[in-house]
View 1 (cartoon, helix red, strand yellow):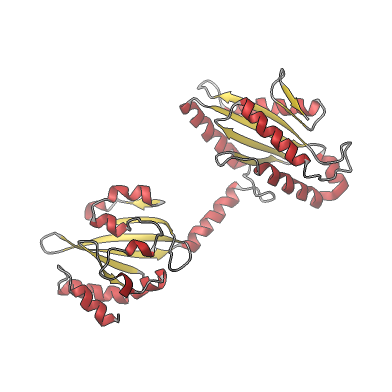
View 2 (cartoon, helix red, strand yellow):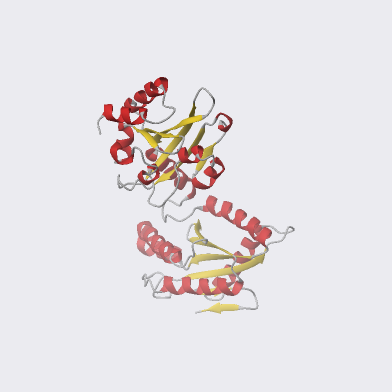
Length: 333
């Protein structure tokens, strides 16, 4: 379908008067991706820039209610569909960010990831939607314009990761640990659930560094970080707490459950078989202190950290390569 056929197609729809037709012709030539739905949700404009963004030619979508197929694999309304159908309350649930400050005038903005099935690449799009009304104030059409902000979003994500990730191991850093522990403590307080914490320290790491140098020490920490991370659930957090020490936050986990995770971590690290010529044991090992608290208003998460630290100290004092829970209950290899 060529440009003249597209213009004729959109002029066939009700309410597309001469002024609207002129505006639609301008949209067709606009360098910004844009499409227009009529009052019944049918596509009446699908400009060249939109073809380039989505990989979908206009003739496939004009006259249909299938604009969503160009952006998503599963059925889901576009922002323009939500405005046509007066369902703008659903915007917050469907987009990563949105602005309905201009909703009284009908203008809505949002941002989010789109699958882009035909283009074959996931893109982060900023979307602006504005209604077009006839002389009687009735909705005649809705215009949706799109901006590809994928590069900007990926740069933002990278910066956020730099702020919250440890550069050596790729784990969460101390700042991220502190923020997450505070958030999980508040959630445990609201939901009256236990919160467990593991403090994991590499045994005899100074001797390891002396024997293998700092490059070897860095590689050792990276291997151990990977081993610890493999034991995590989706909502757990493992962080590099500092130096050769790691911390593991286990939301809604009892002390017994934390002990099981700790023992799995201890075994997994030992099974790495990282040789340690600078220590009495043949391979690199870790000691782990575990603590659990039922959050209470009169307490704070620093007490949980102190308890887990004390348990770690006991594990070290008792001979290393073991876990420590409380003074009365110890777990060891």
